[in-house]
Length: 379
Image (tube, rainbow, N blue to C red; front, top):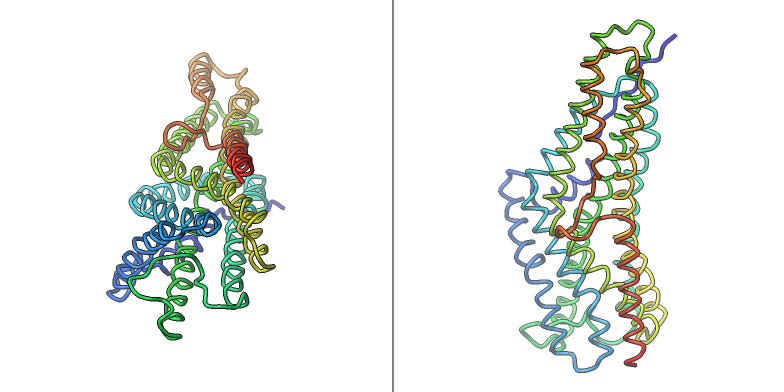
């Protein structure tokens, strides 16, 4: 008895992603949501990094500057990436439509099992990992203030009034910083979970296409007409995948460049803070969790960026593995042209310069280590 293949639904992977946007007041026509969006844009996206940057200029000691620099850079680039992705929301929705069309092409139990047991599971693990890492980072930052003693802000920052004027003013300022960084983290969840999740889904669909290509002409009752039709449909699937890649290049061109710069700066400065400026256990815990968050922020995107290239390179072999030898010359000519198309290297670059892959990840880590050694020499 043949089992009916499970339905592949890529859009289910993005439910939490779109929840982030709804919580931030976007993707809704309600008036209150638009008001919420306006308030978050003014007081978090724009003002929050500004008040941290101004706070850096007010700090007179190197220790205070190093303590404030990681979160300042993180909030600045979080706002920068959020604006970039917000501008590209229409392209993100277009990518999701193409995924839905590719989902309908999964015609075998093998394809369905692979996608649901591998691609979907890994994509869900990615966004859950970001929630855990960013949540722990926020909790440890708040704990470092609440249990450290004294009247210290969550982060060094500038306010247009005396923060220490009264208990009420101080705690209102701390509340603003806690609320602001929590919303900035929510923005960062939308920023940072989308690239690796989408790369994972793209790589999964490329693998499904390779499965379909290798089966062409091998069915017991397949005619030459049906085999030719399957080849044309596979060529159309490849065209859709390349369209997704082009859209991703446009969507992530500037935002991921900011990601690499932010990660390099944050990883190096966080190491310096752990070694020289963490004055209590809560501070050490916070910087340790923050360091892991910065690594997690970059690694999945680079890993799945490389995986896309690897899976794309396997398409040529999958085409050759099909039963093409019994077909006529016109079919073989189309097959040969298709194989030539799949030989082109597929890379998504940040800023049009940095290929999003493991080479870029290791280069960023080496750059961070160089900054760290420079800080050690200037100690």
